[in-house]
Image (tube, rainbow, N blue to C red; front, top):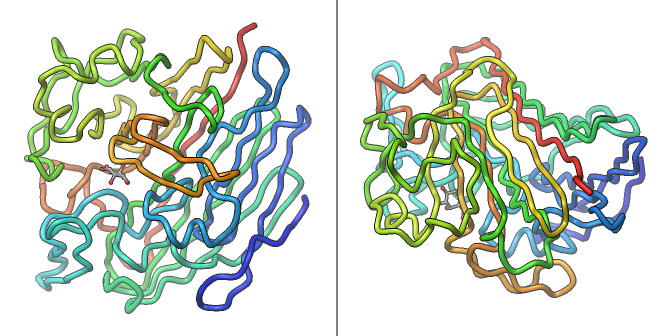
Length: 346
Ligand code: GLA
């Protein structure tokens, strides 16, 4: 494993970039700032290594932009309506950072702190963070580890383990933006997606779920047959209109089992990505609001130039009895896994 300087944060902390590789030279680069996946290098059908995730060249880029590129999101990924929730009869208020709602835990999210490196090998690294009860104003002090492993079958596994000293919300995710033609490509609209979900959680115009679980049948949200992202993205469906493209939570079939649930494929590069998770839900987001200058090598990243497959519990689960609870009891273990496996078709 190689460790290189990744710049200094505004708070004066030194950030590092860790370079990990498997036996095929598939490489991941992760920084301790936000426990963020910065690069994922994988060879395309011509044998040229492509960087398949959007990002920045140093920590300053991650601090200055708000798209959560590659970061670990927590304590709660996705939205909490009205930025408040009740646990054991007590109401907690957290940051309002999207309309009146909380998105991705607000300004002191896990994506904004330097994590400690606990363990590493040549192809695996474990980050640790102690999240105090004052950090984001969720109840209790929480300890969390995230392990990234680039396995020899070219799967990137991301494994989360958390524990707190009070009943609290735990619902992390990784927010990587993938483009299988490389981060320099302008569009993912021709890339072909499969999502093994019969249902999704419809949401209001602020992307807060209504509580309903609805079938994808007959809608442009149905990816049970592999379809290009761009084929139906502009159709007049309320979900596509609210999100300005795909930005919705799919209901996973095999919750609790670490099974295949989605894939993306590019004919141009020949690269295929297979997604697996044991999470109950997955937000599929096609970077519909993206407008970032100053990306890697000065790149500008625009709308629909990447896709996110965010494995997590359902959005706003704290307000819906019928959604699997994101509340973890004091002393209990929170555990979640997501995997992204890369292969190439020549
Ligand atoms: C998630 C949300 C999107 C957007 C991105 C971050 O995927 O669902 O609406 O906020 O995060 O830009």
